[in-house]
Length: 108
Image 1 (cartoon, helix red, strand yellow):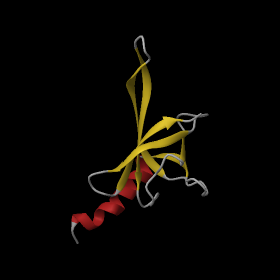
Image 2: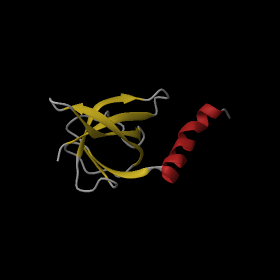
Image 3: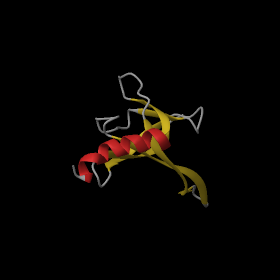
């Protein structure tokens, strides 16, 4: 058995141990509650007369949990940001091909 064939199982175990539970609501479908790796950072946005700090959130979700590419009509809620709903922006695939990398934008 080679290491490549073990990767999906190891990734799932890491997600379960270290991942953050999110609520993923595909457009027109029932909610899904996968564990994902959520990266909270700060970014800057131009507000005309200057710049403001805004939260920059990226989520890494395993494709086994969310098989279809996330799109802007889907919605995501994060336990660490209660009361806010986000939409996926510019989804891409990680280098391994096992995860979606999704930037989030607040919708409410």
